[in-house]
Image (cartoon, rainbow, N blue to C red; front, side):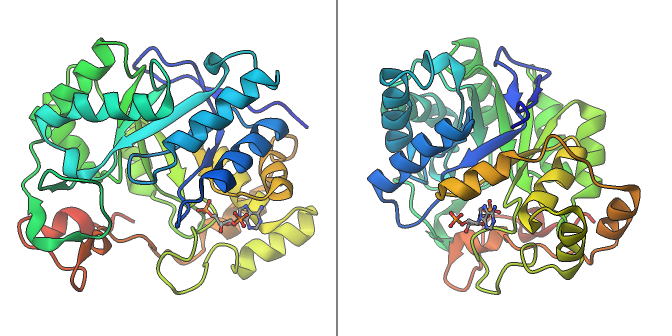
Length: 322
Ligand code: A2P
């Protein structure tokens, strides 16, 4: 297998980020299943893992990394790139550092490579629960929360800091107050939701884009999977002798974006790294550029009932930037 390329992040002291990472959002959480999947991923070559306070997979990830060190699959924790995220109930200036400390305790690590604000949404302080009650939504203090994120990096507890699910409008707010600009914006991105406007903006500002749901996600919307079921991608996959998943991940990589791909299956994990020794053709890229665009993950789905919310501007979450 070709080596996994790495991306240097422009701000922060993080080690370079491997261009494909493993996602660990899987509900319900089964500790052993997550731990075994991470170990299998390390065996097949993954060195980049994505977790979050919300996912409750920090502990099994940590156990897997510790075991991988014990059995010599990796020399030390330094060989892996670990991202975790601050949940909406902790998006208050005085709760950021304690939340990261709790994450580090779960991870049994001294630092995370990357710490992200999970959503541009603030909810009343409390445990990370999903979905949240709409009456718990509060205005987001972008300046205060970002200052606290910067403190996390200054203290060396996060080697780099960034955001997730931020639109250009949210990024404007952070950049207006930032001393340390966000290194990464992790968003839904795949051939069916290409995020051209956001990518253009981030390239201009030096913010690296990472893709979650690079294969269309785990049927979050209940409407199937527009990526894995795409006829355009299936045709290209057939012509190249690859799988649809590989075509999607290869396309994302060619856009300069890092994929966070979730699989707990060893064969599929392996397959998801076998994308670096071949290329799409110009014609493939042209066909992919014409795929009708459709977003799967909606911010309003964070809230119940009926996905409505009051004190957050709905326009903040629903911006369609294609
Ligand atoms: P599984 O864990 O059974 O492999 P995303 O990363 O876009 O969130 O998509 C994850 C979904 O795609 C998961 O349900 C995962 O299931 C599945 N998946 C991951 N890798 C592949 C692959 N190479 N081929 C087909 N399905 C895959």
